Amino acid sequence: ETGVTQTPRHLVMGMTNKKSLKCEQHLGHNAMYWYKQSAKKPLELMFVYSLEERVENNSVPSRFSPECPNSSHLFLHLHTLQPEDSALYLCASSQAPSGGAGTGELFFGEGSRLTVL
Amino acid sequence: EDKVVQSPLSLVVHEGDTVTLNCSYEVTNFRSLLWYKQEKKAPTFLFMLTSSGIEKKSGRLSSILDKKELFSILNITATQTGDSAVYLCAVVRQGAQKLVFGQGTRLTINP
Image (cartoon, rainbow over all chains, first blue to last red; front, side):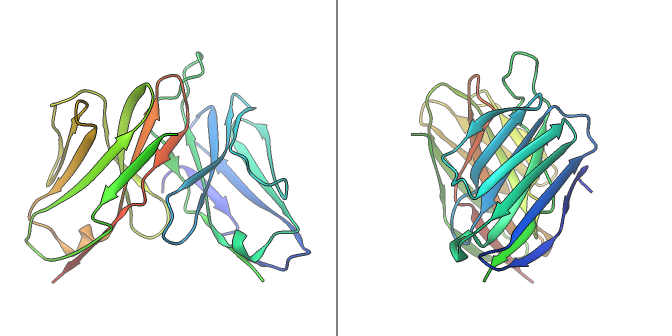
């Protein structure tokens, strides 16, 4: 139990569906992240929210839309995905000092395994 | 562009062996290097290294950073089957929040 909970753990969707991934952290952290993990590729950072403000968007296609309503919750809204978007999506949190620079140590959730048909 | 390269990508050893995993990096304004272990889903934190030459140790695992040669190693002694996992290396820049990860080393320990 890492203190970061992701739902659903598995999701299968068609290319025309709209779905959302949810992440909740119980660690009192103020920064949250979405990472994508594809087979045989490094973990790719998608989005960073610090103090509920998006501070990084790594050229992610607009069919992925993040939402951070408060410091404990993070969503990833999915629509009109492609089969190549099938991957493990990992949420993480960390404690960022008020200056904006993080401590470095991320706490990861178990991930949501997404399959796009 | 920041870059992290891990080697080997895959390693199979027998229980009781000692292994050394490598991580080299290129990053502007380096702040720290982190090692994670990923068994099934969630990567779990092992070490964070910020200073050269100071070994971090936790049980049978140890790690050291060389900021001059831009690499780190992770050592595991007396390996056990429970050490089987993907080991991830990541670096962080000064003033940044994102970790840049390497591809990982898949370690398999056979009984």
